[in-house]
Image (cartoon, rainbow, N blue to C red; front, top):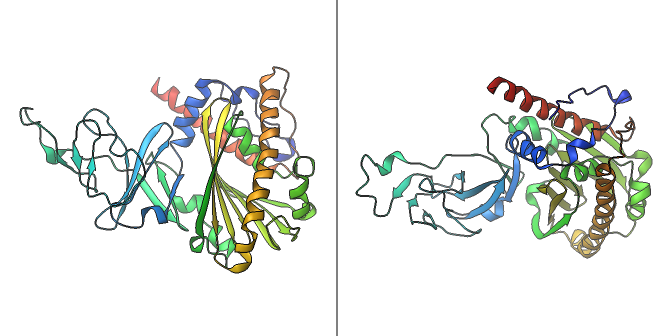
Length: 359
């Protein structure tokens, strides 16, 4: 893949080449260079409250397992037995006393230490005490639980630092889980991200949302690893209430949509070069005003997501047509796109440099 790492200033910027939005090779590169080298949102603290509570998932093609130990410590491991790769857990659950491989029964303590290996007494120089599951970095923030595959990911505070302070007195950790919705669409995962990080399309794609937001005051701020779009809210009857909306994008694939009394997390997962899944989790405060708006909020969110899916799938066809030449970005309205694409360019550049050094 060509490096394509030239990222000019915003006033002269063009969009990225369409070659980055297709092909299995590009997606494989992104799994290694982007998803494996970033903090991935995989669970909520409520799912992992007590010893033995566990969550399974997948990051960059790697099966993962989060578990609360008997000592109260939250740990992460590849969900892969050290024997022949069998799974240690098949689904989320509660109250495990140990991790038992579903293939051959090797058993580990919740801290990852092998405790027993069935019928291995004839294996020479085999010592149970020498075998442990490799640990993964885990971090809890505002009730959300993140994991990182690689040791050289940015410091968590460098990625999420400043968000809690900016939205204060809103306390995301005080909100209670309500519902999960999965949306699948026929577009590259980056198309969905780029649609999210700009409000330029709001008047043309989202008439209802445009009535709730103040487009003239819609503002984008850029930080090292995340961007923020914010706007005053009108109580237009769509379930948001009056106040302020905060739309955070955290590189590479996490979104925090914060409106009065509500947190909506989005995690974008590539399913193929031209397919992705967006996982929506909803959390609400317990106050009566917020509770009375939930039904309207849910319905309106489905409406907005349908509009986004339609335009993103159309853009995928345009980029794949062979007739698209990267256009200029709007400096006022598309700084978030420029910011995200620069982070992607840097990831591609690091991968190319690493490959050259290895070669």
